[in-house]
Amino acid sequence: MAQEHSGHHGPHDDVHDHQDHQDHGHGRDEHGGPHGHHHGADLDWAVLAPLLQSQAELFTPLYRQVMDWLGQTVREPALIADTGSGPGVVACLFAETFPNARVVAVDGSAPLLERARDRAARLGLADRFTTISGELPDVLSELAYPADLLWASNSLHHLGDQRAALAAFAEHLAPGGTLALLEGGLPARYLPRDLGVGRPGLQARMDAVEAEWFHRMREELPGSVAETEDWPALLGAAGLKPTGTRTFLLDLPAPASGQARAYVADTLGRLRDSMSERIDAEDRAALDRLLDPDDEASVHRRPDVFVLKAYTVHTAVRTG
Image (cartoon, rainbow, N blue to C red; front, side, top):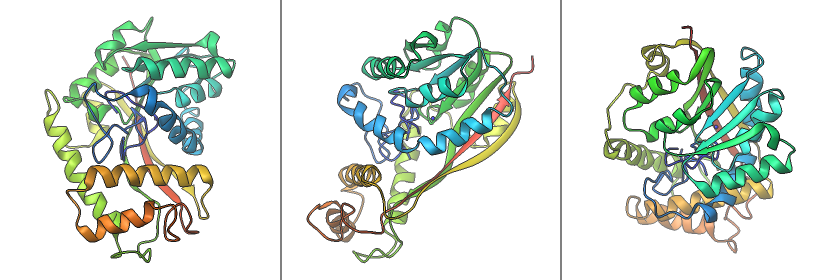
């Protein structure tokens, strides 16, 4: 789910879509670039794993809302596939939410899947938890049998032909199975519009830079196809029956916890590094102050830091 997906598709995630994505995932989306998205093999996932895991854990209240909603219509699933699972935080939440289901964590990173297996073992879920390593969507052919619930969190937008990928996802659903697609929502907010440092509206200007970067990222993907991002329509074109759309909110008000502050500092730090040539000197200076632990105006010390983020989930069912 923004979750914590690495994926050479998506934040996990959520580390999030700002690094991941605006998490990833893969539910992660912390792979470099303004969003953190990255498609090379030069990232050390073993090093990034703790960050991806921490971000997914911070977003757990949001993911629990999603699962409560899915549980109203998805009854007794035998197999749940988390595509772009990252270090397995969300996959393990699925295993806890649906105690009779087998859960498969699917990701392109072996170090992240190792962490997912370790987490499942610590939580006493190992007997119902397996992993598959490979690239989406082809790797789904390794599922032992079709999924009753397939979760795709911020992973689809890392695939060039999203329409074809959704069709492939649909092929791996059991009759009556549900595809839950997390794509979209609202940019995260961590600070007031006028934060007393630099010009007001810093995050809005960074959003504009990220949006342009995301557009270029999509254009440069292998086999990239431009699509109107009408997700229910695209799910219908994949042969599925759209069944619902809902947006979920992570609302961690000020004063932020230590975990939330660490997440905000890491996110802003990655954005500062990736955007340095795309933002002006005044905004770079403001980010430097926000990231300086010795500065009273920094996110490490100021009392008004918060985390506010919305994720949108679309569901569709295989009727045939």
